[in-house]
Length: 297
Image 1 (spheres, rainbow, N blue to C red):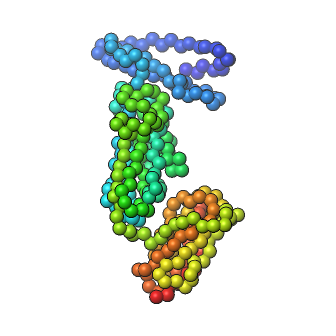
Image 2: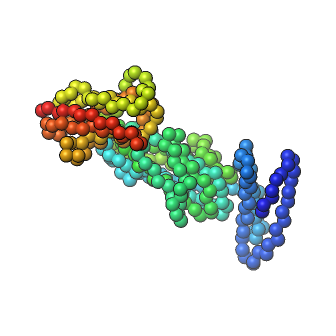
Image 3: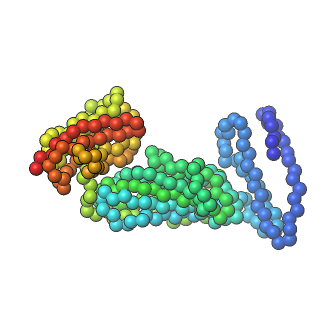
């Protein structure tokens, strides 16, 4: 229905006549949108029931959240995959669904992929900085899935909790964002990380925020068995720091994560590598910086 321009306080009405076959039950929803931003989009959806004598007094959905992890007993340095699934178990579609899943300390974000039960969902984005998964609309019976790939960076038991924090319609048996673990819109997955496969440790440096991307040679250099490699980024960005031998073969991945603006240091432990000259490469987007270090045993 193309309404056109609406003046302040103006109301336009559309009447649609439909025929309902015997035994059918229909929930008919409508959503409104306009060319200008709406200060409150939560009231842009409405509807009504047909075909049943006893119906709820208001439109409600019933969203359920499940969360699992593919490896509950990883070693530090391993990559794991969290799987979140939001299912609309009601007979009413809804919109504006969001899930908050802030990765706890000891878990570093690597990547995320979202989909629905029918197809990939390019609009279902996960913001790793905010820890928010924008699910968007969910039809009745739909399931939206998010897979978060992350790296374990600390040992011990780590619990990762997710919760549905936004939904345009009321939920039948839960309240979005209230933090109640007994409700079905909140779920958690725990890991027990042991041992260590890490060859590096990232820590904050000193000296403020550089004007450009920086990668300094390691100190000490030559070294045995570890060296500290300073680097700096002028803005928060995803950074990879890798080590290659002189034949171009990668020997270590020291960093593959988003770091804040400023100066940082990564400690590289090279206990399992032979004596030789190695190339340390920093990559941030299209920016590449390289330094040489020498391991002497």
